[in-house]
Length: 375
Image 1: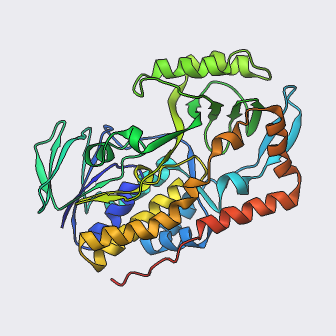
Image 2: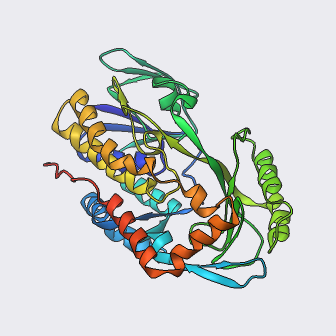
């Protein structure tokens, strides 16, 4: 088939790898002018994720690029150590920079797939026998199938299923990533409703803060920086120094911690994958869900026509992705009260609680009977 994938981050190229192997003609369209760099590190957990990476043929390359993870020291306003956030919690079994993983998957698919950067889908018309697609820059084309792997603010989902507010639930916290000219390595600090890390395992600077009903232009970086400055103004520890560095921040990114709620991931000849379908709640499962979802979707298309394949994919992934209905990193990383902060820290100060939390994490990551699709 002739298949269009929207999104060239991780979910899209992961699916493209499988589809190209099965002989499909794959086009990947990406709004950004090139592969996106920076962003937080991502991780994989448990045997299920490793099995899919191995079947993709990329496990050794992922392992060779892993960051190794790092413990993070939680400090008080005086800079005194309170407890340690273990690297095994923040980094899973295998942690890798998001841009390294994206580049790896792109490298494995660039010769077998068509990539179109600096373009975006503007309309989708399911004709029954195909999907007529128009673009911002390219000429219209018709595809057998269209896959939305374009994130929690998915254009494909909006065009094929309806407006974002019908499916995306704001969970009351926002997060920001930035490169700041502020020294510090693997440090984490909390005040009620806000958290910041310096030199942490996920990003050079990482912010999570409580915010209800925050409204802003997703493409206005300066406006977003001001929102973060306002959210952290008047704080203790090194927050004044950090706030002062935000205007000159590089690689700045802000978004809400949200959840996508959908009964079906497919409509006609259009299907959603990754955050577009089962949006990341910043709970550490987004990349694993995307890679497993790509494996399942391609495998089901190998077994049957798209109608049956999409239905089976939805059934399998809806059960596996139920973790996003329970996970929400916002209240965990940035509790709204001092009592909540102390309770969160206790999880890392008392080994039985920590082991229980890690057991639950592993259980969610492996909670799928992974089909072995015959090639």
